[in-house]
Length: 122
Image 1 (tube, rainbow, N blue to C red):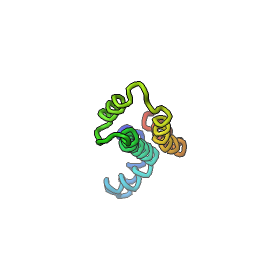
Image 2 (cartoon, rainbow, N blue to C red):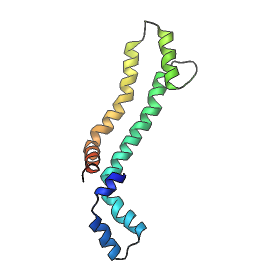
Image 3 (cartoon, rainbow, N blue to C red):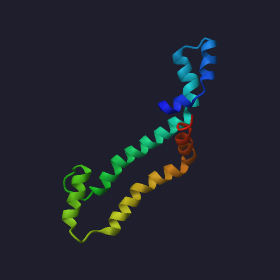
Image 4 (cartoon, one colour):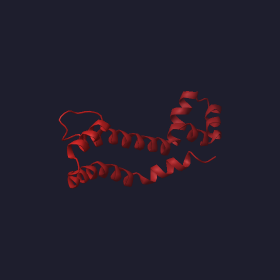
């Protein structure tokens, strides 16, 4: 967010200071609304990251007798399955995990792209 806030026009903050706004008021009432695309992008990426941290291990460890972390779960699945794995079931579970993330990206595609590109420009 620091790079994004550097791209916001300083003239707007100066005008707010001339009008008598404090630093806090300038930040929350002027700068934060102008930083809406960047905040939306960060929110989307954080939600998607948390979704992946929660649902993927949950789906992969559903058949495991004891719930461990993801890497131990994958090791357990691979040792139990050997060379015979339930590939259709695994791909169905992975599709259920990826589908909500894909839907969120499709819905917020414009905000994600504008938030990523606006913080990179000078």
